[in-house]
Length: 237
Ligand SMILES: Nc1ncnc2c1ncn2[C@@H]1O[C@H](COP(=O)(O)OP(=O)(O)O)[C@@H](O)[C@H]1O
Ligand SMILES: [Mg+2]
Image (cartoon, rainbow, N blue to C red; front, side, top):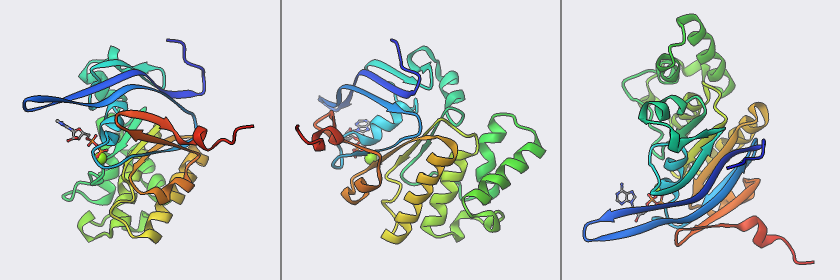
């Protein structure tokens, strides 16, 4: 498959079916989509429409039944589980809906984890963690435990951890679902800054239609099909 240079994520003919007891549920049907470098894309759809499954396929946590997934030049079909683990948190970072922050570790230690896994030395780890905590405005909470933080702060820790290896692609599952509106807006502003400062491609999944205005582009997941809302909005000349 030939991929233009500024396409960072490409899905081609991706299908995903789950076995649910006696029957099969087709969650994703023939998904064909490109995501470009440095855009913020919203994927909307009702609960159960397959949004989380789609993100997990891009992150390499779930393998599609068929089709190709290319992430920053890597064809995920060609990678074994170890290969997928290696590109995760280096090329692509996934922030789960519950943030996935580890309560037993401090804020600093949470953000340090991907660097430890990547074998980065102590001094470099310390420098990078401090840098990213400063960037997201949480340096003063470095030695706090997540249980003492607000929802918005926990989300920031999750974003910092996802950002510390400067991935090309940041995936966030319902990042504002558990936040009040003012805090949600601040998190969205943070995503916009990340896009601008690091040229990161950011894909956000949400069932909240209010977030649509904050995206460069919006896609709709309905009945397993992905539809481009942006093109629907384009006026006919
Ligand atoms: N691991 C799984 N095994 C079986 N069914 C699943 C699994 N994960 C998701 N599903 C089903 O696939 C559908 C889509 O789920 P999901 O991707 O979580 O949707 P969304 O994030 O849009 O709510 C749902 O019907 C869900 O029950
Ligand atoms: Mg979901």
